[in-house]
Image (spheres, one colour):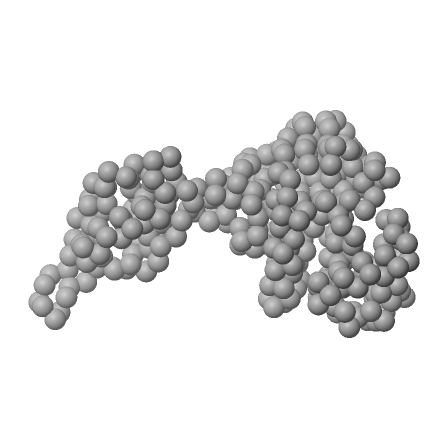
Length: 314
């Protein structure tokens, strides 16, 4: 997937403004941004629902409106997609398979396969109108995976689902990694951080960041150590150790570029050169110093977290 200087206007409003990015083949790619950022408009242009006002979009070397060329190769789950109320689930999926060019036998086999993948085999003769929200969402995901699509677009695939079903949907998406290219638009940033290889962050129609999840969260450039207040050791009558001495010890490590301490969060942020050393080596060195200074450690993490990064940028 590639977008080149894509702009979409609605009257005087630029919903998407000069957006360019490439989605690596076989990856899970996230579309991120607050409400009004241009995610759904971008998603709709990728799916061929909307045409860009200017710029170019290519999906598998075709423009998204090349229906015949992309038939059976592009699967889409729109946000809040409605299933046909009076159709039975199996009939609905078979019909979509035949629209892709499958014969009746291939369509039935394909429908049975994707329903099993979303743990919905028992719904074959169930009318779509009687499905719960979670069941309907999984049928929607099943139709997006019908056949052997090379690209699948999922808009808010876990919105409104209970935690158990949302977890199952994430596992389905993960199981497809490498078998096709997936683009996922979602407000659930922890979810995207878990399942995506790379992402783009949009704000007011413009790209504010684009890269791998590691690059976006700086997980390969900094570590965060949450501390607890240092206390005296009453068993030995020793005075409370010095926090400043512990931080100074971390600063003296040759692998460390810069150290910051957030007094409000009681958190140590350690920056390092990812070209010279990996995060795990830095974590080991930092913890060794802190423990030798009798620091009390609550947690250790790599990077800022995708949610914090988005809050900083939008």
